Image (cartoon, rainbow, N blue to C red):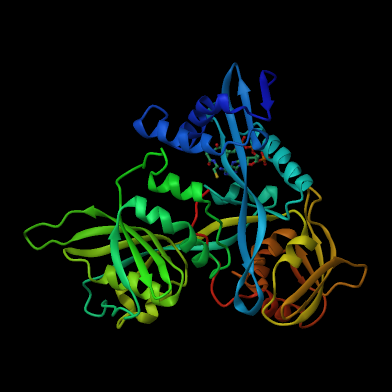
Length: 417
Ligand SMILES: CC(C)(COP(=O)(O)OP(=O)(O)OC[C@H]1O[C@@H](n2cnc3c(N)ncnc32)[C@H](O)[C@@H]1OP(=O)(O)O)[C@@H](O)C(=O)NCCC(=O)NCCS
């Protein structure tokens, strides 16, 4: 253990061996053709100060990085607002150095840096459930995978009649995708932002090379201009014996309901394809309500996706809005790192919300992880209560809290990081 050196910042000149360590630990291959493409992506926005590593005998055996990202939070009138967050990524420890506290050391430093920077919360996508709870993260937004049986008798979707969809090449899509996604993202809580750089990397523009099979790209245009993006690729060919092919949707981004309908209508009309897989989708995919037979869409998987860790409770609770007006005094407890604990008064009234420290007697005692899990409105405190960390100190407070924190649509994040 003594030969291990914890490094921060990690200079960009170390990006190749550092990323090779990430790739190896996350079951990738640092020697395949895609590695140099991934390296070009990583180095395009490398932040040395927000990159950690552990080195042993000159070799990277631990990696961790954080990105400055934004996530949508519940806003006024059922809309959304924005919260700047610390986004954790690239977390690995080499198999030869696991369970010796290296992750603990790196994440303690990175969370302390995020707290000092003033971030109200940190987010991540967990490879495995048991890893991050001990560091204060809780699953706050779920996602789902669907199979859409497009040849099912009740699977047809009629277009809205208010726009058109046409196939485009990546360069043309690149001119519109960023703006369309920004508008679509504002329609859901839990959506992490995508920069223009993100789109250039994804579409293989501006010197970046695409990774994997290039999808077919479509742009939907309504009366106010481009408002929908669809990308799909085939995953199985059709046969002349009548067997139909299969496809997978890579992007389905709609800035309004008509765009959403029209992109699904295009999917419902694909020839020689019978099965369309849609990973990384919301748990409450609304297309079910457009289908003549809702069972043409099957949810094949659903689980935790974005995890959230509160770093500054008054700032995080003041940054969002609440579905109904109300007041709550919450005793936040259980944070071994000491970032989130304390008693706060939450006051919400329509478009206004404030959360301040208080000495008043508490209505609820919540573990900071229970509060993090319910922060985006994706689950009720009453659901979580069975696992502990939810204590009602004044009758009626739990029902009130659930009504205040809840959102109409389930939180969902479509963007990996
Ligand atoms: C997950 C990973 C980074 C943990 O690193 P590590 O240095 O071994 O973690 P630590 O030694 O600091 O572990 C701290 C605690 O978490 C526990 N823990 C760590 N990873 C765990 C896992 N995958 N499942 C269950 N418990 C885990 C350890 O047992 C330890 O518990 P203890 O304090 O009670 O002994 C490492 O195992 C890894 O790289 N795994 C493969 C890649 C991966 O999953 N990365 C995460 C991407 S989101």
